Image (cartoon, rainbow, N blue to C red):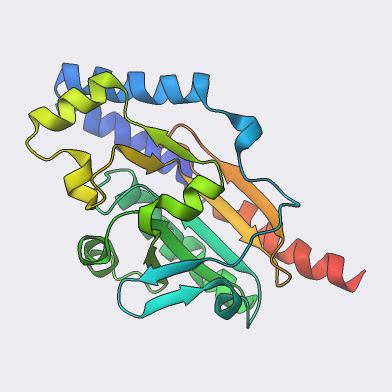
Length: 223
């Protein structure tokens, strides 16, 4: 039986914790716990929301607009933090192996989305040979519209500054904001049919759930 994405991430984190300095591990755990406890879930993107036109920048192909993405079928957006995010480097290859081809077979387009600037974001696409689009959400514009942004807490800011590479420099955005891991399925009418936001970045949407959401679009259309 294939190990689930959540199980894969839990196993990864357990191994990582063995070598991670205790103070950094605590900052990581505390930030995730804080987000789970305080996230404004009422403001999250949800099924039924109408998505106005937006524009992303694919790291190799340039501009991607919502109308163009929807030309061939539904769109699946996977929001992740940045190219160097350890959990993202587990999740995106997992989606490559267990989601991308299944969505393509259904006529859906998969796009990974991060606020990181294209020249920095390209690294994760190349390193893992991701066969789907990886795009920049400039200024977190779409993530903000979807209500899925979070800001580093004070301990995370201090740690980021101490590392010599504050997250704003890592992403190229100059801010402390990142999106929470989120999966959004948009139908050809520009309506959200599925949305799953995870304040804890070690919990991500399973591929089967996303595939079922896309299939349901076609089933409902045929009913």
